Image 1 (cartoon, helix red, strand yellow):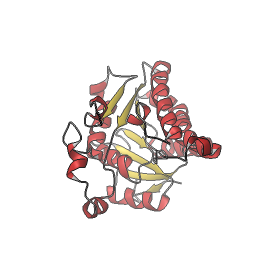
Image 2 (cartoon, rainbow, N blue to C red):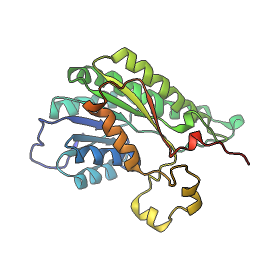
Image 3 (cartoon, helix red, strand yellow):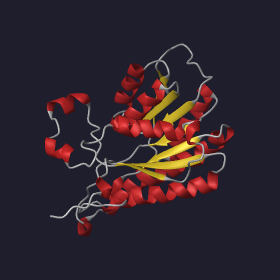
Length: 258
């Protein structure tokens, strides 16, 4: 069920965005940025305790739903709750993911782990798009999928995560063609984003080397991603669909020899 930040009715005459995986990190940063631009924002996450607290802190235009995006029944129920409260959905941000890119070696990779990563990271965005599409279409809405530079580059033992994010890029352009022109669909691929809680960042700051290796001179922030997502959801991006936008401080363009 939705946990509302106020007992009184939330104003429902503005744009409504659904942001998954929003209890922390990049998802929380996106939700906060959209709220600052006047959106009504519905946050979803599996962590209902933190999610409810975050929604209350964010204020009267934020609310929270517990959702496992890989469960179609939960996705359908969650969207029905949003529609029951607001009567519309204008934007979908698919950020929920099993974020740890590393698994065991390929030889010992458990099929259940592989299937779970793909279910959350790839099937989840498909299910959300499927169930949100009629309502996004009614308002010429937009979808942004959070992929990763690991769709293009890899470290050892990251097969499940890389495959899920590579598939998400393909799903993005497929959806853009299927759902256009009413619905625009784009992907954002973050690189190294310091998405840790502020208290952790203060206690364990990144090194000068961490920052200096980036052509932009620093590691990314959640705000770097959130600003781009907000633009892609806006009318200013009305001619942009089916695209991938890399936010990595230039690392995927840097030639590195050891």
